[in-house]
Image 1: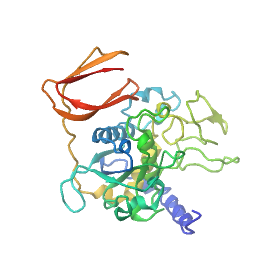
Image 2: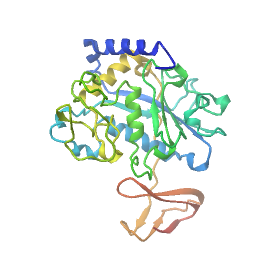
Image 3: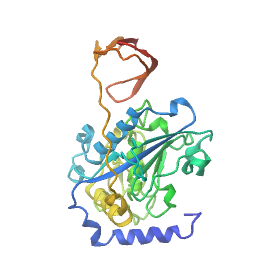
Image 4: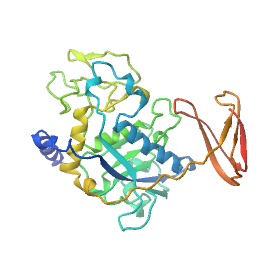
Length: 340
């Protein structure tokens, strides 16, 4: 807003349109499928995330945008009636803007440090990755930001077309071993911004500023960590377990019906190309069967494949919370044994 004097005007115009009754007319539409392209812009090998982690993040977006997450049961009873049960689904695009077959995943090796916070991120010739047509694809850049930024999303009408999308630090993309953002919900939160959601709180002593959503209570400040319910501000319980607050991943659980209506309205009014996109969805590669024993275990585990794999690959172990606990890169024949 400081850099662009017209940004405030565009923001007010958007809020005015969303406040009108037509903002509700998308609620009855059939399921919305948004085609996605993920740009992995990496500098060190650990930033070059495997395809499986990208697919896992897409599954997380679909799960959380449609209340299919198991921890939806943790929503306090007073907020349960407001949980949105259906919304938006995402898929990796199987064709690029020029009609060529694609996986929906782009990998770019860069020499730019902290490129996730640099303008270079959006330009291939400067060490980043050009966006696919942002009118027809939801662009996600996975790139290293600063240690204080887990990710960010672009609000409608606020940045140039080639920068429309979200950016997520590779450390927090998909299931990972972060202590607080381990469930891939940084991308869920930032996607909320991309589809027009404000944070659920506002630092305003007069209780006069809201997020524009009727079923989210007024909230004075953000929350972090995993607070106990209820937390009170402005005379009512705060909805800190909403995806648009700043709590830990395992303590945020849902979008409200009002938030989902707003996101669907934003799609129709400000991102209609995504609704009209004809980009087909990629099919997830098959998952090969294997045996793991003993399981569960805190000691040694043996993994066997029914046929020799004879390849060099990464093996990642996750615990039951979805946290990455161990990684090994070694030749794989008919199996491996690892002391956890």
